[in-house]
Image (cartoon, rainbow, N blue to C red; front, side, top):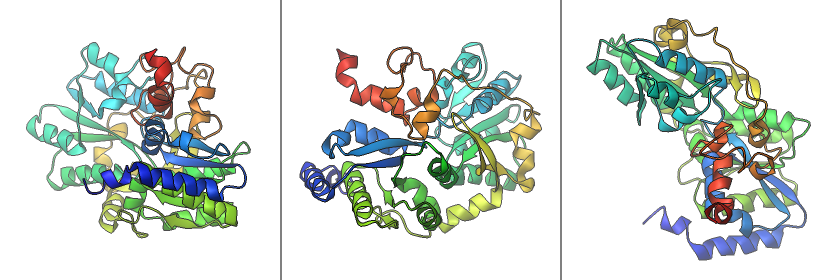
Length: 366
């Protein structure tokens, strides 16, 4: 199959592993930003193919993992209201809020429904005008254009029973925060290819220059990731700090202008709290004044809902690459996919789930 099989080719992967070993002269720590890349690394055993001196740490690019507790609590509050339908992607239902999750609200009789697209939620609102349909909009630059289009279409067509609870976050501010942390050990990044397919990578050039880190825009298949690691290590060994594009079959420097246009039409920048990390200035998106009538947080009066995170979960250190999941004392014991303490053990893109499902597979199956 074109664009899949050739990027999972064993010979190509082994050739790249040999090439990486050939250029590596010292220890390096590289962060892959996206949870999808983390799962590929664990699933295909890439961490065991690269030289021992290269450490891969896992970044904050899991949309479910970084959605703050208070956003979950606001969704729970809305899902408990009469005549409200709360729509979300499936992963969000099991993420713990302060006292329960959305699956618990559904079990208690709340109208919580899983959708595959914000347009599904908009259609639900059109089909049932007696209900107030709220879409829980989470994620990075990858999901923001689709959510923006749903709100745009709702306004254009006069749909007045559709709302959006927005908890969007942006990748570049989080990368800058990680690099500015006194505990930072990241020396190079594998940037998420799908984010750059939307936004381009010109914004990353300032990060590379300001913090002296190489950044390689990388895809998600084993050959993509191995090639990205090779390009990143090569820069580190040569003392270069550039932005390079390994994923050129998908990503252009300018990104997708139409997707960026609809985001700009609907959203403004804002400060945003990240789960496990805290507030990052200008790292989020909110509906702008032209679309405030669709802002569930304002319409339902939920902006006063606040929450404190469980201090027993170390997901914040995992998301910043300070520790790896199996370095958390509760990993695989007090915290499992069946009884998660934090979102990274719940999400299909979570680093803790990746380690549990793949790295410790023999132990878990034993």
